[in-house]
Image 1: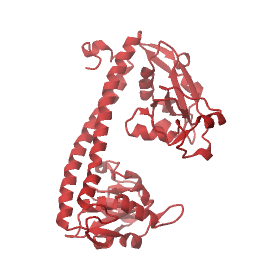
Image 2: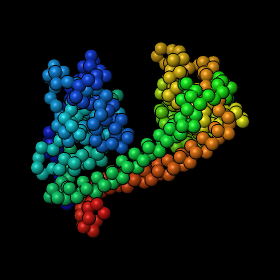
Image 3: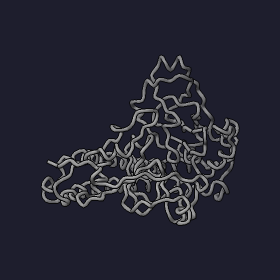
Image 4: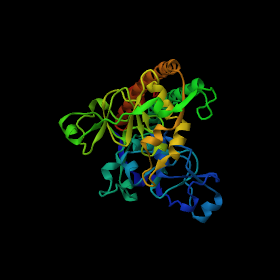
Length: 402
Protein backbone atom coordinates (compact mmCIF):
# COMPACT_ATOMS: atom_id res chain seq x y z
CA UNK A 1 0.00 0.00 0.00
CA UNK A 2 1.15 3.54 -0.76
CA UNK A 3 1.31 6.00 2.11
CA UNK A 4 -0.86 9.09 1.57
CA UNK A 5 0.71 12.44 2.48
CA UNK A 6 -0.77 15.92 2.08
CA UNK A 7 0.97 18.08 -0.50
CA UNK A 8 1.41 20.83 2.10
CA UNK A 9 4.26 18.81 3.58
CA UNK A 10 5.95 18.09 0.23
CA UNK A 11 5.80 21.08 -2.14
CA UNK A 12 6.35 24.76 -2.74
CA UNK A 13 3.29 26.41 -4.23
CA UNK A 14 2.63 29.99 -5.30
CA UNK A 15 0.82 31.97 -7.97
CA UNK A 16 2.38 34.39 -10.43
CA UNK A 17 1.70 38.09 -10.84
CA UNK A 18 -0.41 40.11 -13.24
CA UNK A 19 1.20 40.84 -16.59
CA UNK A 20 1.45 44.60 -17.28
CA UNK A 21 -0.68 45.53 -20.28
CA UNK A 22 1.97 47.93 -21.59
CA UNK A 23 4.27 44.97 -22.29
CA UNK A 24 1.61 42.84 -23.99
CA UNK A 25 3.10 41.11 -27.03
CA UNK A 26 6.66 42.06 -26.06
CA UNK A 27 9.20 39.71 -27.69
CA UNK A 28 12.43 41.61 -26.99
CA UNK A 29 13.29 40.08 -23.62
CA UNK A 30 14.86 36.73 -22.78
CA UNK A 31 12.61 35.82 -19.83
CA UNK A 32 9.37 34.04 -20.86
CA UNK A 33 6.17 35.20 -19.17
CA UNK A 34 3.53 32.48 -19.44
CA UNK A 35 -0.21 33.00 -19.43
CA UNK A 36 -3.07 30.49 -19.35
CA UNK A 37 -3.39 30.50 -23.15
CA UNK A 38 0.22 29.33 -23.46
CA UNK A 39 -0.52 26.33 -21.25
CA UNK A 40 -3.66 25.41 -23.21
CA UNK A 41 -1.91 25.69 -26.58
CA UNK A 42 0.95 23.37 -25.63
CA UNK A 43 -1.28 20.86 -23.87
CA UNK A 44 -3.55 20.61 -26.91
CA UNK A 45 -0.44 19.81 -28.97
CA UNK A 46 0.31 16.98 -26.50
CA UNK A 47 3.38 18.80 -25.20
CA UNK A 48 3.89 18.37 -21.45
CA UNK A 49 6.81 20.81 -21.46
CA UNK A 50 6.65 24.48 -22.35
CA UNK A 51 9.42 26.65 -23.80
CA UNK A 52 7.61 29.13 -26.04
CA UNK A 53 5.64 32.05 -24.63
CA UNK A 54 3.61 34.78 -26.31
CA UNK A 55 5.33 37.38 -24.10
CA UNK A 56 8.94 37.90 -23.01
CA UNK A 57 10.43 40.40 -20.56
CA UNK A 58 13.89 41.70 -19.68
CA UNK A 59 15.65 41.63 -16.31
CA UNK A 60 14.85 45.35 -16.03
CA UNK A 61 11.13 44.71 -16.49
CA UNK A 62 11.32 41.83 -14.02
CA UNK A 63 12.78 44.22 -11.42
CA UNK A 64 10.19 46.88 -12.26
CA UNK A 65 7.26 44.53 -11.64
CA UNK A 66 9.04 43.01 -8.62
CA UNK A 67 8.70 39.52 -10.02
CA UNK A 68 10.25 36.34 -8.67
CA UNK A 69 11.22 33.72 -11.25
CA UNK A 70 9.86 30.20 -11.13
CA UNK A 71 12.50 27.48 -11.35
CA UNK A 72 13.02 25.08 -14.23
CA UNK A 73 10.93 21.97 -13.59
CA UNK A 74 8.09 23.87 -11.93
CA UNK A 75 4.69 22.38 -12.75
CA UNK A 76 2.25 25.07 -13.82
CA UNK A 77 -1.52 24.96 -14.22
CA UNK A 78 -4.44 27.37 -14.31
CA UNK A 79 -5.98 28.17 -10.94
CA UNK A 80 -9.11 29.67 -12.47
CA UNK A 81 -11.30 29.16 -15.55
CA UNK A 82 -11.95 26.47 -18.12
CA UNK A 83 -8.31 25.35 -18.40
CA UNK A 84 -8.46 24.40 -14.70
CA UNK A 85 -11.50 22.17 -15.28
CA UNK A 86 -9.79 20.55 -18.27
CA UNK A 87 -6.85 19.39 -16.09
CA UNK A 88 -4.12 20.94 -18.22
CA UNK A 89 -0.66 20.66 -16.63
CA UNK A 90 2.70 21.74 -18.06
CA UNK A 91 6.30 21.61 -16.82
CA UNK A 92 8.59 24.63 -17.29
CA UNK A 93 11.78 23.87 -19.19
CA UNK A 94 13.54 27.04 -17.98
CA UNK A 95 13.23 29.77 -15.38
CA UNK A 96 10.23 31.94 -16.18
CA UNK A 97 7.49 34.23 -14.92
CA UNK A 98 3.86 33.13 -14.78
CA UNK A 99 0.58 35.02 -14.71
CA UNK A 100 -1.48 35.52 -11.56
CA UNK A 101 -4.11 33.10 -12.92
CA UNK A 102 -1.55 30.28 -12.78
CA UNK A 103 -0.15 28.23 -9.92
CA UNK A 104 3.43 26.97 -9.93
CA UNK A 105 4.17 23.88 -7.83
CA UNK A 106 7.39 21.92 -7.28
CA UNK A 107 8.57 19.23 -4.89
CA UNK A 108 10.71 20.54 -2.04
CA UNK A 109 10.99 17.20 -0.26
CA UNK A 110 13.56 14.46 -1.05
CA UNK A 111 10.79 11.88 -0.61
CA UNK A 112 8.90 13.15 -3.68
CA UNK A 113 10.09 12.81 -7.30
CA UNK A 114 8.98 15.99 -9.09
CA UNK A 115 8.00 14.13 -12.28
CA UNK A 116 5.98 11.69 -10.17
CA UNK A 117 4.18 14.75 -8.74
CA UNK A 118 3.52 15.97 -12.29
CA UNK A 119 1.88 12.73 -13.39
CA UNK A 120 -0.15 12.58 -10.19
CA UNK A 121 -1.49 16.08 -10.83
CA UNK A 122 -2.10 15.23 -14.48
CA UNK A 123 -4.58 12.54 -13.50
CA UNK A 124 -5.99 14.32 -10.45
CA UNK A 125 -9.30 16.03 -11.18
CA UNK A 126 -8.99 19.48 -9.64
CA UNK A 127 -12.59 20.03 -10.70
CA UNK A 128 -13.56 18.03 -7.61
CA UNK A 129 -12.16 20.72 -5.30
CA UNK A 130 -13.05 23.77 -7.39
CA UNK A 131 -14.96 26.58 -5.78
CA UNK A 132 -18.48 26.75 -7.15
CA UNK A 133 -19.65 29.82 -9.00
CA UNK A 134 -19.69 31.34 -12.46
CA UNK A 135 -15.93 30.74 -12.86
CA UNK A 136 -14.26 27.63 -11.36
CA UNK A 137 -11.25 28.33 -9.14
CA UNK A 138 -8.95 26.77 -6.55
CA UNK A 139 -6.84 28.42 -3.87
CA UNK A 140 -3.59 27.52 -2.14
CA UNK A 141 -5.23 25.70 0.76
CA UNK A 142 -7.23 23.56 -1.70
CA UNK A 143 -4.02 22.32 -3.32
CA UNK A 144 -2.20 21.82 -0.02
CA UNK A 145 -5.06 19.63 1.23
CA UNK A 146 -4.64 17.08 -1.57
CA UNK A 147 -3.15 13.77 -0.45
CA UNK A 148 -0.67 12.08 -2.78
CA UNK A 149 -0.04 8.31 -2.56
CA UNK A 150 3.71 7.71 -2.17
CA UNK A 151 5.56 4.43 -2.72
CA UNK A 152 8.02 3.54 0.00
CA UNK A 153 11.07 4.31 -2.16
CA UNK A 154 12.13 6.87 -4.74
CA UNK A 155 13.11 3.96 -6.99
CA UNK A 156 9.46 2.87 -7.21
CA UNK A 157 8.41 6.43 -8.04
CA UNK A 158 10.99 6.49 -10.83
CA UNK A 159 9.72 3.17 -12.20
CA UNK A 160 6.23 4.64 -12.48
CA UNK A 161 7.63 7.77 -14.11
CA UNK A 162 9.59 5.65 -16.63
CA UNK A 163 6.45 3.77 -17.72
CA UNK A 164 4.40 6.95 -18.09
CA UNK A 165 7.26 8.75 -19.87
CA UNK A 166 7.41 5.94 -22.44
CA UNK A 167 3.64 6.06 -23.01
CA UNK A 168 3.57 9.86 -23.30
CA UNK A 169 6.49 9.77 -25.76
CA UNK A 170 4.41 7.57 -28.07
CA UNK A 171 1.66 10.23 -27.99
CA UNK A 172 4.17 12.99 -28.71
CA UNK A 173 5.67 11.12 -31.67
CA UNK A 174 2.26 10.24 -33.13
CA UNK A 175 1.17 13.87 -32.81
CA UNK A 176 4.35 15.12 -34.49
CA UNK A 177 3.83 12.61 -37.31
CA UNK A 178 0.27 13.85 -37.89
CA UNK A 179 1.38 17.50 -37.86
CA UNK A 180 4.09 16.74 -40.43
CA UNK A 181 1.62 14.89 -42.65
CA UNK A 182 -0.92 17.74 -42.39
CA UNK A 183 1.66 20.16 -43.73
CA UNK A 184 2.14 17.99 -46.83
CA UNK A 185 -1.15 18.92 -48.52
CA UNK A 186 -0.60 22.73 -48.47
CA UNK A 187 2.97 22.07 -49.66
CA UNK A 188 1.64 19.88 -52.46
CA UNK A 189 -0.89 22.57 -53.36
CA UNK A 190 1.87 25.16 -53.69
CA UNK A 191 4.09 22.77 -55.66
CA UNK A 192 1.34 21.99 -58.17
CA UNK A 193 -0.28 25.43 -58.46
CA UNK A 194 2.52 27.81 -57.53
CA UNK A 195 2.21 31.17 -55.80
CA UNK A 196 -1.50 32.01 -56.12
CA UNK A 197 -1.10 35.69 -55.34
CA UNK A 198 1.36 36.26 -58.19
CA UNK A 199 0.07 33.40 -60.38
CA UNK A 200 3.62 32.18 -60.99
CA UNK A 201 2.40 29.29 -63.15
CA UNK A 202 0.31 31.54 -65.41
CA UNK A 203 -3.03 29.83 -64.89
CA UNK A 204 -6.19 31.39 -66.25
CA UNK A 205 -7.69 33.74 -63.67
CA UNK A 206 -11.33 34.22 -62.76
CA UNK A 207 -13.66 35.27 -59.97
CA UNK A 208 -14.35 32.70 -57.26
CA UNK A 209 -17.98 32.44 -58.38
CA UNK A 210 -16.78 31.16 -61.76
CA UNK A 211 -15.49 28.07 -59.90
CA UNK A 212 -18.19 27.66 -57.23
CA UNK A 213 -21.54 28.94 -56.04
CA UNK A 214 -22.70 29.67 -52.52
CA UNK A 215 -25.45 27.14 -51.91
CA UNK A 216 -27.66 28.67 -49.22
CA UNK A 217 -30.47 26.13 -49.01
CA UNK A 218 -32.37 27.29 -45.93
CA UNK A 219 -33.75 24.79 -43.40
CA UNK A 220 -36.43 26.35 -41.22
CA UNK A 221 -36.79 25.89 -37.46
CA UNK A 222 -40.03 23.93 -37.99
CA UNK A 223 -38.29 21.51 -40.34
CA UNK A 224 -35.38 21.17 -37.91
CA UNK A 225 -37.83 20.21 -35.16
CA UNK A 226 -39.55 17.56 -37.28
CA UNK A 227 -36.40 15.96 -38.75
CA UNK A 228 -33.09 14.78 -37.30
CA UNK A 229 -30.08 16.53 -38.84
CA UNK A 230 -26.39 16.36 -38.14
CA UNK A 231 -25.21 19.83 -37.10
CA UNK A 232 -21.93 21.69 -37.58
CA UNK A 233 -21.40 25.04 -35.90
CA UNK A 234 -18.48 27.36 -36.53
CA UNK A 235 -17.02 26.26 -33.19
CA UNK A 236 -16.89 22.68 -34.50
CA UNK A 237 -14.33 23.52 -37.20
CA UNK A 238 -10.69 23.75 -36.15
CA UNK A 239 -8.94 26.85 -37.40
CA UNK A 240 -6.26 26.41 -40.09
CA UNK A 241 -6.59 22.60 -40.33
CA UNK A 242 -10.33 22.54 -41.09
CA UNK A 243 -10.70 19.43 -38.93
CA UNK A 244 -14.30 18.81 -37.83
CA UNK A 245 -14.10 18.49 -34.05
CA UNK A 246 -17.25 16.50 -33.34
CA UNK A 247 -18.51 13.00 -34.06
CA UNK A 248 -21.06 13.67 -36.78
CA UNK A 249 -22.39 10.12 -36.66
CA UNK A 250 -23.86 10.81 -33.23
CA UNK A 251 -24.57 14.54 -33.46
CA UNK A 252 -28.29 14.30 -34.22
CA UNK A 253 -31.28 16.03 -32.61
CA UNK A 254 -29.38 19.10 -31.49
CA UNK A 255 -31.67 21.73 -29.96
CA UNK A 256 -31.53 24.22 -32.84
CA UNK A 257 -33.53 27.43 -32.41
CA UNK A 258 -32.83 29.28 -35.68
CA UNK A 259 -32.72 28.58 -39.41
CA UNK A 260 -29.68 26.72 -40.77
CA UNK A 261 -28.07 25.96 -44.13
CA UNK A 262 -28.19 22.48 -45.61
CA UNK A 263 -24.97 20.80 -46.82
CA UNK A 264 -23.85 17.48 -48.30
CA UNK A 265 -20.50 15.73 -48.63
CA UNK A 266 -20.09 17.50 -51.96
CA UNK A 267 -19.84 20.91 -50.32
CA UNK A 268 -16.95 22.84 -48.84
CA UNK A 269 -17.89 24.56 -45.57
CA UNK A 270 -16.44 28.07 -45.29
CA UNK A 271 -16.55 30.11 -42.09
CA UNK A 272 -17.59 33.63 -43.14
CA UNK A 273 -17.44 35.03 -39.58
CA UNK A 274 -13.91 36.15 -38.69
CA UNK A 275 -12.42 34.69 -41.88
CA UNK A 276 -8.92 35.27 -40.52
CA UNK A 277 -9.54 32.17 -38.35
CA UNK A 278 -9.33 30.17 -41.60
CA UNK A 279 -12.12 27.67 -40.92
CA UNK A 280 -12.60 25.68 -44.12
CA UNK A 281 -13.84 22.09 -43.88
CA UNK A 282 -14.76 19.11 -46.02
CA UNK A 283 -17.78 17.33 -44.50
CA UNK A 284 -18.14 13.58 -45.07
CA UNK A 285 -21.94 13.47 -44.73
CA UNK A 286 -25.01 15.63 -45.11
CA UNK A 287 -26.45 17.85 -42.41
CA UNK A 288 -27.10 21.47 -41.46
CA UNK A 289 -24.69 24.19 -40.47
CA UNK A 290 -24.70 27.58 -38.79
CA UNK A 291 -25.55 30.52 -41.03
CA UNK A 292 -22.08 31.85 -40.11
CA UNK A 293 -20.87 29.14 -42.50
CA UNK A 294 -21.28 29.24 -46.27
CA UNK A 295 -21.87 25.86 -47.98
CA UNK A 296 -19.71 26.20 -51.11
CA UNK A 297 -20.55 23.97 -54.08
CA UNK A 298 -17.90 23.41 -56.78
CA UNK A 299 -19.20 23.84 -60.33
CA UNK A 300 -19.36 20.51 -62.12
CA UNK A 301 -16.42 19.80 -64.45
CA UNK A 302 -14.89 23.16 -63.54
CA UNK A 303 -13.64 22.74 -59.98
CA UNK A 304 -12.90 20.02 -57.46
CA UNK A 305 -13.84 20.31 -53.78
CA UNK A 306 -10.30 19.44 -52.62
CA UNK A 307 -8.82 22.14 -54.81
CA UNK A 308 -11.42 24.63 -53.55
CA UNK A 309 -10.83 23.71 -49.90
CA UNK A 310 -7.08 24.33 -50.09
CA UNK A 311 -7.51 27.37 -52.33
CA UNK A 312 -9.84 28.97 -49.80
CA UNK A 313 -7.59 28.11 -46.86
CA UNK A 314 -4.40 29.36 -48.53
CA UNK A 315 -2.55 32.33 -46.95
CA UNK A 316 -3.41 34.48 -49.99
CA UNK A 317 -7.12 33.81 -49.65
CA UNK A 318 -7.13 34.37 -45.88
CA UNK A 319 -5.35 37.69 -46.37
CA UNK A 320 -7.79 38.85 -49.05
CA UNK A 321 -10.93 37.86 -47.15
CA UNK A 322 -9.67 39.50 -43.96
CA UNK A 323 -9.45 42.80 -45.85
CA UNK A 324 -12.97 42.49 -47.23
CA UNK A 325 -14.90 42.03 -43.99
CA UNK A 326 -17.51 44.36 -42.55
CA UNK A 327 -18.58 44.77 -38.92
CA UNK A 328 -16.22 45.93 -36.20
CA UNK A 329 -17.14 43.50 -33.41
CA UNK A 330 -18.14 40.51 -35.53
CA UNK A 331 -16.32 40.89 -38.86
CA UNK A 332 -17.89 38.89 -41.69
CA UNK A 333 -17.31 38.60 -45.39
CA UNK A 334 -20.40 39.12 -47.50
CA UNK A 335 -21.63 37.01 -50.40
CA UNK A 336 -20.65 39.43 -53.19
CA UNK A 337 -17.26 40.23 -51.70
CA UNK A 338 -16.46 36.52 -51.52
CA UNK A 339 -17.75 35.71 -54.99
CA UNK A 340 -15.68 38.44 -56.66
CA UNK A 341 -12.30 37.46 -55.21
CA UNK A 342 -9.80 36.90 -58.02
CA UNK A 343 -8.38 33.36 -58.07
CA UNK A 344 -6.55 30.99 -60.39
CA UNK A 345 -8.47 28.55 -62.58
CA UNK A 346 -6.36 25.45 -63.42
CA UNK A 347 -7.76 22.74 -65.70
CA UNK A 348 -10.05 20.29 -63.89
CA UNK A 349 -7.69 17.41 -64.76
CA UNK A 350 -4.90 19.06 -62.73
CA UNK A 351 -7.30 19.73 -59.87
CA UNK A 352 -8.35 16.06 -59.89
CA UNK A 353 -4.72 14.94 -59.76
CA UNK A 354 -4.22 17.14 -56.71
CA UNK A 355 -7.38 15.75 -55.11
CA UNK A 356 -6.22 12.15 -55.57
CA UNK A 357 -2.87 12.85 -53.90
CA UNK A 358 -4.53 14.85 -51.12
CA UNK A 359 -6.89 11.96 -50.39
CA UNK A 360 -3.95 9.57 -50.09
CA UNK A 361 -2.35 11.87 -47.53
CA UNK A 362 -5.64 12.27 -45.67
CA UNK A 363 -6.07 8.49 -45.48
CA UNK A 364 -2.62 8.23 -43.93
CA UNK A 365 -3.44 11.01 -41.45
CA UNK A 366 -6.68 9.23 -40.51
CA UNK A 367 -4.82 6.00 -39.79
CA UNK A 368 -2.29 7.87 -37.66
CA UNK A 369 -5.08 9.64 -35.77
CA UNK A 370 -6.60 6.24 -34.95
CA UNK A 371 -3.23 5.10 -33.61
CA UNK A 372 -2.94 8.33 -31.63
CA UNK A 373 -6.33 7.74 -30.00
CA UNK A 374 -5.21 4.21 -29.07
CA UNK A 375 -2.04 5.64 -27.55
CA UNK A 376 -4.03 8.21 -25.57
CA UNK A 377 -6.37 5.49 -24.29
CA UNK A 378 -3.40 3.40 -23.19
CA UNK A 379 -1.81 6.40 -21.47
CA UNK A 380 -5.00 7.24 -19.59
CA UNK A 381 -5.31 3.63 -18.47
CA UNK A 382 -1.73 3.68 -17.18
CA UNK A 383 -2.36 6.99 -15.40
CA UNK A 384 -5.44 5.50 -13.78
CA UNK A 385 -3.43 2.59 -12.35
CA UNK A 386 -0.19 4.44 -11.66
CA UNK A 387 -0.97 5.57 -8.13
CA UNK A 388 -2.42 2.31 -6.83
CA UNK A 389 0.78 0.24 -6.85
CA UNK A 390 0.07 -1.42 -10.21
CA UNK A 391 2.92 0.10 -12.26
CA UNK A 392 5.97 -0.92 -10.21
CA UNK A 393 8.76 -2.92 -11.79
CA UNK A 394 7.51 -6.39 -10.84
CA UNK A 395 4.34 -5.77 -12.82
CA UNK A 396 6.41 -5.50 -16.02
CA UNK A 397 8.64 -8.51 -15.66
CA UNK A 398 11.60 -6.48 -14.36
CA UNK A 399 11.48 -3.76 -17.06
CA UNK A 400 9.75 -0.50 -16.22
CA UNK A 401 9.62 0.38 -19.93
CA UNK A 402 8.25 -2.94 -21.05
